[in-house]
Length: 427
Image (cartoon, rainbow, N blue to C red):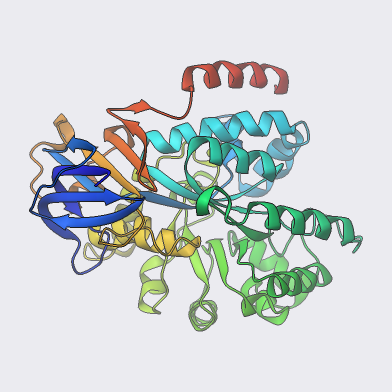
């Protein structure tokens, strides 16, 4: 056995059997080889008494390099925030900036227990290389149409996208996957959407999009296309491939029926949606429609961190307050959203749950803190009291990326210095 995690409180990520109890986890060749009460010889043993062992978290929608804009633009609605504040800064970004920012985001995610993420941004090769350096999992999206470019000359963009997908899909022994970015219905025209749908079908790619994020988006979609955003996607053939749809805030029952019948996977980003006053996605109703919902942080420019424990906490609370029903969004459902649902949503079906044969993507939570004492229910503790800073150890594909809060693959101090210098040049 390569690694043995000993005497941990094991949370499986499996709804209906979420808490295993105290036990041991054996890891061999990057896989979970054993879960049970027995100990066994291993090359390395991690003593995990008073720790929770759980599947690593999957951030199913983010723009990692937007850590460069953390706390820059606040107290604005989405349209003003994006057009007046974010787009001008994005025009100054270089590949070098993106590489450093991606690494800093990776460090932040590792520290707070995220083992994989779905990304949409610029200079995607730089983000992919940063992921491989850090040792995380990621699905990185690249489209064939630059946002707002409706000249319908797609050939150069197609060539770039195809090269990226061929070079990086499956890279790092499967750590990196790729998908097709379709930013939104408001930054594309109908030809661009149809062209993107055909490209995704031809090359067997998942689509990563923003969908139904604001009321303005829905109103403008009806004005522009005559249909609501998800109806536009269906009309243009986009729902003939797997679609991961960030936000899904302003959806009615018909929208949810379309999503459910076509296997669309919404990503709930509660912090970002409140930060930009986009509203509250009706996740309880989606669940009643049988839709598997994942969790995401969005970018750090609209959050302003990448802490998935914060998203879990909000997801577990805001729907209770909004609905007046304290039974909705129970802790086990929220954990499932951040682990098993998130992993499947971004294409890592062999991660997100702890049982034999699954990828060894595991985090250990130190519960020896005032805010987690006494730990009467580990599953409840993960949603209602645990902080990202409680993460002690992060393991991806059997490799230790952090132990005892010490990063093993990233020089965080050097990165913080670099990012501060970049910020001085951007602002």
